[in-house]
Image (cartoon, rainbow, N blue to C red):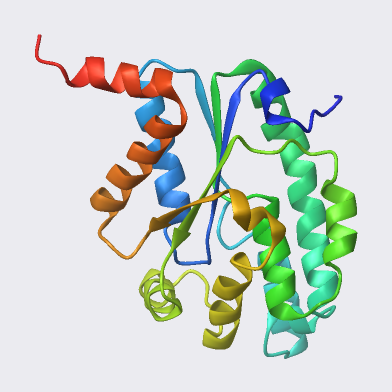
Length: 223
């Protein structure tokens, strides 16, 4: 399938969520998708499983080898590259067809997440990832759900599914402000409860897409 870079050329409207692990971006992506469906839009949510397929495989390999971390199996740079390759395959199989078919497509993490992550790790292969992702479409809107690293870490601990190091989460959050894509981010405070963050997300989506605002207003009007 031929990919299209420019947002205005995409058949669907494309919303990407970004943020550190534990920021709540996956939850908010799913909630935003449900809201858009309730408003009558054909909406696909492309959500990644956490921990990722790559991380699960490498975690098992690390445990078998007696290594302390999944990145110790092949090193941070190769780990991120393999993870990006797997995600690139997934996007080609799910995201790109949905952009041709639906009214809205919402993805819970996208290329900006990889760029910020490899900068935070200092792997030095950001340009390689950018070359791989260069033909992927640019979102109409990228929503960065921002939380303090301490908050993200506590959420991950409560979730008990995966973990991250505090130093990495702090660097990851910082690098989101440093990558070129940050100029077009819509930043949402993710420290509030899920409902409050969801309201803020919906407000920003409605501001970005006037037809969504009109449908939401009509839905809220008393009959």
